[in-house]
Length: 305
View (tube, rainbow, N blue to C red):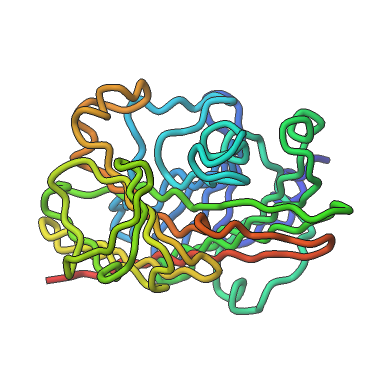
């Protein structure tokens, strides 16, 4: 019996195992009120998060590639053990390209992270190939949970099972679906310093009382508040991002010129997406042997005026 059959055998309410067209397992979480989330074992990646009215809250490109080892353009890719090109590894590290397994016996979490929620626990351990490019033994446990009210929570626990310390950077590279990027504003980053990737990571201070979009944006906000909100004026919807253990926030939209250079991204799709990531980038996380780090992201949606 494989792990998925095992979990299907003791099927929890609101958890269903399916396969995509490439035969890769996916887990669908459903809340009693009708909200849903879909998680692929390719990358441990959340690909869909819908409200109880069936509105899709995450963006996935129409040109996304769903075949490993390509990364999927959209949803919530996990950047580990490297964010972007800040190191010797491939862009955003390897976790988002690997096939994860269902963790049928994870160490326990706080009861609040299970009670009344549909959830799945996934596990990634390094392969021999991974150890050649990044020679550190780790266990990466991910819980994706959907609460009755439709809140989506991702909890990452990374443990060093090496005999020496290692350091990593991390991000939940969340692609939000928006009606029109020019109608969106982001609050919670005002007065914060940021590194601007369009200016060789030069450091600036955010002057505006909210972030709005008229051109390409690619920034790492440092030591940001633990709550950031994305207001979509056209459809009167606000997504609230709460983060723990993730001091930084990335904001990215490729705009017109960059979109045309991305093979797995439609030329006009920049108008309907915005990445806002909970992240730990500027100061890498260092784990001594046996230590564990936890990074938590909670996403909720509320109507706005």
